[in-house]
Amino acid sequence: MSASVVLSSLANGVMLGGLYALVALGLTLIFGVMKIINFAHGALMMWAMYASFWLAKLGGVDPYLSLAVTLPVGFAAGYAIQRAVITPVLEAPEHNQLLMTLGLALFLENLALLAFKADPRTLLVSYSQASVSLGPILLSLPRLLAFAGALAVTLLLFLFLKFTDLGKALRAAAEERDGAALVGIPVRRVYAVAFGIGTACVTAAGAMAVPFFYVSPEVGNTLVITAFVVVVLGGMGSFAGALAGGLLVGVVESLGGLFVHGSLAQIGIFALFILVLLFKPSGLLGAPSA
Amino acid sequence: MRRLPLLLLAVGAVIPLLVRSEYVIGTLTLIYFFAFVGQGWNILGGYAGQFSFGHALFFGIGAYTSSLLFVKAGLTPWVGMWCGAALAVLAGLLTGHLSFRFGLRGAYFALIMLAFAEIFRVAATNLDWVGGSFGILVPLRGHAPALFQFGDKRYFYYIILLMLAGATYGVRRLESSKLGYQMAAIRENESAAEGLGVNAYRVKLTAMALSAGLTARGGSFYAQYFSYVDPAIGFGPTNSIEILLRPIIGGAGTVWGPLLGSFLLGGLGEGTRGLVKSYAGVHLMIYGVILMAAVVFLPHGVMGWLRRRGVRG
Image (cartoon, rainbow over all chains, first blue to last red; front, side):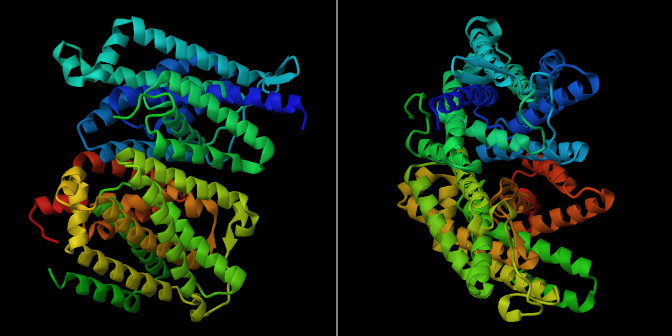
């Protein structure tokens, strides 16, 4: 195995990790603000992927351009889901919140199965197979774009939370729900915005994944479990952690694929996940657990 | 009400004598089956309050162990079923020891169980000697009761009916035992229970072992009934969800919850299958909606709703 193969694999792992980070970003935002683990996150991404897929297939719209439509729709869907589905269980025991999002995931996933059938579809765009060479390293172009997109979204989100009034209100509501309500922050609306943004993140991830990832009703299932791993690795609620965790998982999966056959590399990721849950449930970058 | 269990068992036993329809017997068999594995989940999730999102782990161990022992060593699944249960108990003790020793609760426990089950699913998919992604076909030997194979599906009906009756009786005994009260105390407030001298680690581990063994035997039954198991059917996340749906809807932490939930979902599943014939998964979509509605309107399941109306059980 030559060094350039390993290097290319490493680099492509980093790129894939960027996509995972973007999926995890929305999950970690929703968790950070509401302490709710959104099991429907993957199903929402799957719907976003189908949206971009069909817009490209039937309307000839490039997946990246389709974001102009899917992002606002994704945000609105997230906002509506929060109001209709999550708000009723905000005060409920944790396991009922889990079951709520699980029910939503079951519904969305099987609705897609009904609408699109089980067969995986792939979208071939002109740059699906394109690659960029960087010295000895060969980088897949769509993965590179997804990686850049992930970095851009992370940065935007960080700036939004740090400097805008809405972002500050969001952080306040995350920190101390009652206190935020006391000083006049409309906590429920802010929560809905958080869910909307989380869904928009995963919508972006969906569109960026479509040029190089298959679409099927089950794909969300696969990705959301990876996203859980990433979020727990990076520390629930931490943005930097989601990015670092995403890259780590991407690299492990990509390098692992060189040495073991099939999907066995996933075992390494799950094992890592279990170890982190056991020994440092606050995540590799998170604050020490209380 | 004390006679209700025996009455139900008697009705269950008589049904095949009165109803000849294979469809009805098959549907009831699956309803009992899901109630049985739901009862397995119920011990840990309902009574001890530890929500597992990965019970397919134990189901799969049961299904794979009895099938592999039969295919590779010719061992009858009657024995293989108990070997599977023993292995599942071991797996439960190991995963439980790790999770509870390190104090994982709530969502973290749910997630770690999901991860354990996923490891087994990926491993089963990649290991050729357990059938890889194709899984295991249990070779058919005609009517061979000693090998857990029957020419008539009604045998399976009676077997799962007896298994369910045994599990229901066991859980009923458990509920009013010292262990049952300790489990309830941990579910309601673990720190307070420990303050009163309950060894939470040991009680949760016992619940895990009982739960794992029961669920695994359900897995063995499934593999014999359908003569087939594959990694997704055995260890997949959808199976984990199927296992927990019925006890949740019927009422987690109640004796009759799993059975009630199984009848409700089974009835609905069959009803919708008639509506949308071409598509087999539509029942899961409806289960999703029911789950969401139940969380909001029946947070303690149908049994909780009945109890609020003064029904004892």
